[in-house]
Image (tube, rainbow, N blue to C red; front, side):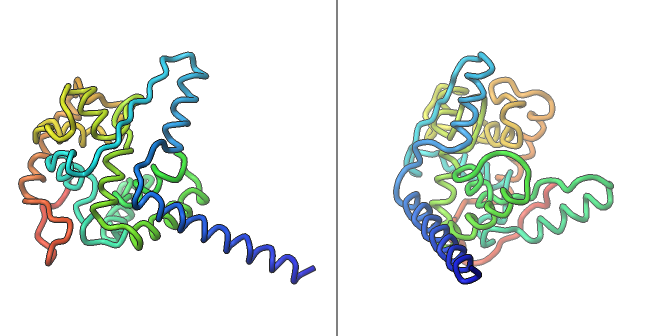
Length: 239
């Protein structure tokens, strides 16, 4: 009996690892047609009697403005090109900040982690989901390039109610393709990413407007984007 249980667990683990690697390898080369979050949001819209909207257009990296690529890195993960999926420095700062203010730790997820979560998992907070997020993050960092991770992220990230990815967001909010986004427009889309269902890129309030200005300042401080830099550069400390 013990041997049978052990064999079953061993086979289950082998199948899980194999399927994980195959999925990650598949999306290394092929576009992402839909994500679990897109399906969940669509079901929520239908069950709540709201207008069903799912705008999502996959585009090549060369059709995404460098302004937007830089804006999301400056806003979300300034160490993106240097870490291996997890920004330990940011995690440490978040934990220390939570201890000082006596509250839950603020988010310190990297773009790699967000890509893994958005592509393979569901929204929510649980140790199981977090464990799977860490697992998939490790694999995409191992098997994908930084350019591919950023491309997938920019093509599937939620940017509004039923709006997913740079191309759909650029057309919806500004009436232009993603490759034509200006620095201001790119910073605006990046500014709403923490909560795209609450903040609206079309009519930013005081908080979002403040973030837009800060992001543009960070973009200038960061300098030209190089996904394979020779050495770490100095960056402006986040507020």
